[in-house]
Every structure is written in structure tokens, then in C-alpha cells.
Length: 190
Ligand code: AMP
Image (cartoon, rainbow, N blue to C red; front, side, top):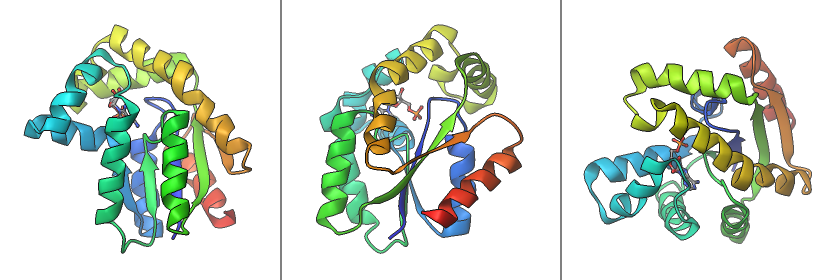
């Protein structure tokens, strides 16, 4: 199984680049943001639990997200591999994911981290907000909050995987095609 994490702050290009990776490597895409939004729109118990956090631009509690990943992985046990997008976002999430995958003998092969500066991130997310229909993409304060959540809670996950020799950084600024090429090069090495 080719299990990878596409890592980076909001607006780094994870959604866009995921699509290229899924197609080329036949991976299943698990985006916790997408799953949470679907649960919220369907009005499920999980969605209701997540709603207030998402509307404030802060992370949903670890136990909610970890339980959700467990269920999603059970659904995708026949896949060639999984691309995790927007997960893990905290050290406990990373530890839970590693424990889960290692118990199956299918550990994370690599973490591909898209690096983009903060000014560009905020600009991109607000631009996306014009068409994404996401309330959290349309309000500058909320976008800033999400970036600050990344800085305080998520960034450390890069160091966690770097210490395991699994973190690969990619410049997320420039032509989409060039970024895609850089990501494919890493994929072919891991
Ligand atoms: P995203 O679509 O990845 O930008 O996520 C949108 C929102 O969903 C975030 O601002 C969080 O409130 C929540 N969320 C998504 N993934 C996670 C996660 N792995 N851990 C905690 N909260 C998450």
C-alpha cells in the first residue's frame, strides 16, 4: 500500500495536487475537511459535533477526527493506497494514524509538505472563497484563524515525520504543473 500524507496549511494547494496524485497512483483520497463538511450538511451527529469548531476556524477535537478516520480506512481496505489530505493536523492525530496503519503493516511511506508563505495563503483562500461556497473561505478573520491554528497545532506534525525521515518539502508557489512534477519526483523515490 502506498499510503501518503499531503501536508500543508490551508490554501497550500493540497486539494488541487491530490487530484493529480490520485489519478496517477490510483489512490483513495481521504480529506477530513470534505468528510466533515459532508457530515455537517447531512446533519449527522458527527457533523453537529464538528460544526461549531469549523465555523470558528479552529480544529475539531482529535477524538472526533480519529474515530472518523478509523471508519474511513475500514471502507477503503482494498485500495492501492490512501492519500491523507488535511489529516493528521496534530501530534496525537499523527500518533493515532501511525498506530492504526502500523497495526495493518501498511505504514505511511512519505509526507509531502507544500510550503507557501502566509500572505499568499490568505490571498489564495479568499480567492477560492469566491467560488467554493465555503463560509470559512470568505471571511479574512476566519482564514487568519485557520492559518494560526496551523502554526500553533499542525506545523509540529512536519517535525514529527521529519524525525522519522519521512518528510519531503515542496515549494508550493509557482506553476501548478511544476509543483505536480516535483511531487511526482518524490513519489517515485519513496
Ligand atoms: P479543510 O477543508 O481541510 O480546510 O478543513 C476545514 C475545517 O475542518 C478546519 O478548519 C477544521 O475545523 C476541520 N478539520 C478538517 N480536518 C481536520 C483535522 N484533521 N483535525 C481537526 N479539524 C479538522
